Length: 221
Image (cartoon, rainbow, N blue to C red; front, side, top):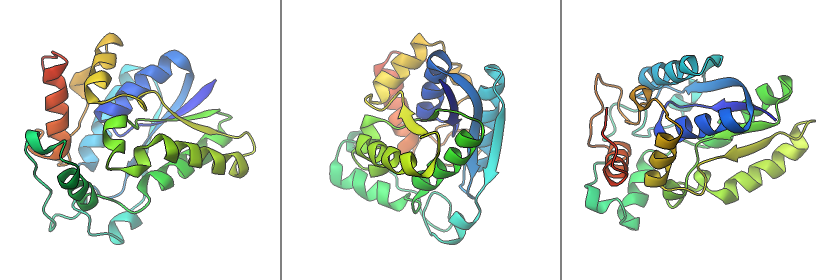
């Protein structure tokens, strides 16, 4: 099986990428720049991971996404939601946080663009970093979304490209544990919503990573 990997440079996509290298022949990794705050850091992380594994990497720009949304993920004028670690499992609070960083049809768009590459490169799979923990508040991380996407791709690609996520059934702790087992170079990943010199340690993405790293007994780098 051959694959194209959607690689943001964050924890989930990096671990799924490492799994794909064992389960498939990875032909290309793709990163998207849609004007997000962390775009440069994500590209740097994805390029470093791809280089580490000797896989070709390409960044694709989709600037119109920034133009059509005021999401806090891209707009410097919008306040990023700040939860406490104790609030991460509060569904109402985490749902509000997810809504503030939602980008219209982002994963749907990325998958369809990746499908163009996968079909052209005669690849069977698109590998993503979807996971159980964030699927609770991000429906485009869910197994149901993957099933629906695959149904659509069975019509829109001649070779019936499919989406898979090797982290789909895992929470963040389990994802880090799997990454440790696979000897993933965690020093390269970037899991912060911001794009500053260091991870902020306060956004929801940083908090989920830190909580999981502590629970998994990982010494952060």
